[in-house]
Length: 327
Ligand code: SF4
Image 1 (cartoon, helix red, strand yellow):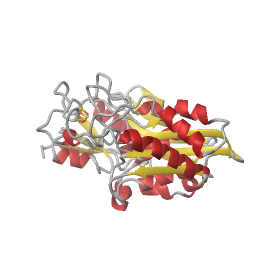
Image 2: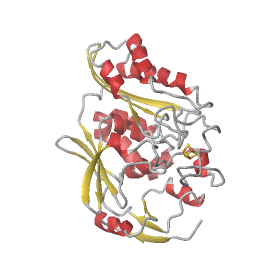
Image 3: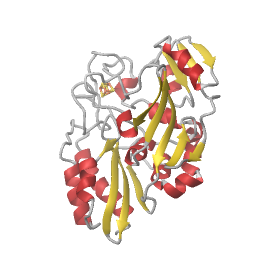
């Protein structure tokens, strides 16, 4: 591992001041992904700014919903009484990710900032546009069974690895960040980005910006929510495909719905058009099958991940059935 400087800060202002001077400075929170990246020299920071002593771990009710501090641990969020009661989709998604030990260390902000698990990204002997611009993409034409079927291009076909973020995107969360120009809010659905011509950028944060909190608006989805994650083994595995489904029901009629997918794109993949199709429809398997077909319109396989073109619509149908509580 390369040598680096270490500093600890106790306020957001000090954190922002510590990084804006130097682009090779990164924030350290739980470190559950960053330390791996540093050990493998995928990321070689010159300075780590330890933000763990900043008081940003509160989970609190607000006028409009719930505010979760960026340094709240994943376990604390998943087990929090208000999250379990009002946002069970978020609890389910967090508990589907990683292992208990990792969830005890990992923070909300760190979960959002984790990098893709594309194996070429972690292998510094292989080409990877995300790790090093204009070097190529080893996964295209290579081992790509974990890779994207939506929104990818010839620059990068990696997927975003988080489960928590799929639920956050589905639940219309908003992110508050602090930076050199002050605070601003970013819709969660706009926080992560598609690869475009800059695949090394995972999100829309500006240099020096620090995540302060995530806010979830209150909703009517608590009774009919389900997070379905399909993976190679029962725990401690990233999603091949996951679906976060949340319904607001009036009898058997879908009044409102939120749907987002994981393991399929460079960002949490929200299915807005499919949601619109489902509003006002009866919750039946036939309706969900039509919805899944609509959701898959833009899907494209890259060889080894072609199985996702079948797995993804089936996962959408099963997640919706579980959320609607139909057999
Ligand atoms: Fe790198 Fe993206 Fe290609 Fe993976 S898919 S090798 S992360 S450019």
